[in-house]
Length: 372
Length: 149
Image 1 (spheres, chains in turn cyan, yellow):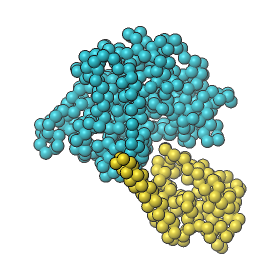
Image 2 (tube, helix red, strand yellow; image 1 turned 180 degrees about the vertical axis):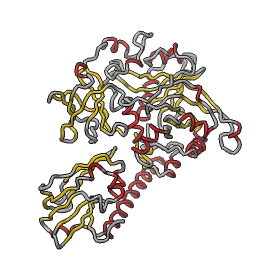
Image 3 (tube, chains in turn yellow, blue; image 1 turned 90 degrees about the vertical axis):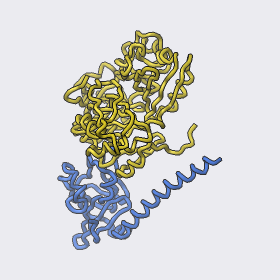
Image 4 (cartoon, one colour; image 1 turned 135 degrees about the vertical axis):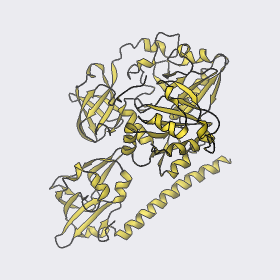
């Protein structure tokens, strides 16, 4: 039940101080941009950028039966995930369609699920409906701030600002690291360790940082002090689209399955029973598939625009944007699987004009070296 | 920065009218450019096109949004700024000079009276900003009352 009052993260005042343009994002007052979307996007691709992600849902699961419960509701084999490892996964309906996409991190006594801000309440209600055994679901969204530093210089930035070194973390792993004693006194960071995961939504190397809400501003200010620019939701969207990463509500929702979206790597079909498994087993080769398109124009296709092949409408755009890296517009859309061939010519109706669009292999952008 | 002798529209176009040649140069104001930020594309009409006051005559697109260019006067397009589409940064730096968009011949000079002076435009911007802040304040206050019920 919500009062309808917009929520603010612990960093709201910091955003105002940084002259952010603030918008309502699914009930949260969030920064859409600070200096400008293209500038912020470019900073992340070439140096580093700082994000406030505290609106995202952080759901912790405890209890002796928590793994049996999670095994039933997640698409990855939770028993095979070592402590400190993160996995991208889904909550699915009985039809195998997506309720949410999320990241599961295995802990010693407590597991962590990071879910979309837009779905947090829906997810919590759904989890409670499917509860079984001795399991505790704790929403820590408001207790813990979530920041991210993303970009090739993100590790350097964190070392400089926080005196912590999460460099030993492999991609998609989590660990806690404390600030160096040298930085301790007077920095506001003297005690305690913060959680870091080497995960992100930009296609660059980067870290997501878990900080108690009361310390969020101190950490944010120290990071800003290195000169790293703050980055808003506008650039977050252009970055993730270039990286070919889906957005719930646009590219995936309760009418699409992970297999249609090309996300089968996050579904272990042969693991012990889970919600949606039977439906997905029956859908081994889906007739429609999510495809990536590059357009020659800078005019952007948006969600819902019609996609044509040989003058016939075959789908609609799920995500579209101008790509600062390619300096062209890009789009994602579900099309018949046989048409999803790199180089295949299509047309997308952009506000009354049919713009040529060509299928490309995803992602649109891939960084130079991948840390594994 | 905003020229004193230009006229302005509520949709943030500026108009430089020359009563001797009876021609008008049209562009968009610094306010419009700032609101849009991150310009990526501009669609202008063709020479010879007929414009109607209040109707869209082109499109300007930023990374996040698309806005119509709205004709502040009716008349015929005489010339378009061919360089500007390839150099949208000019709009950021020189929206009132090098950033001109079209030159036209107004068909009804009485329409000029419906446009604002620079002073009127700046008052218009101030009151639009105030209205926006008032609205935000109202929304928050309403909700606070409900919390006490």
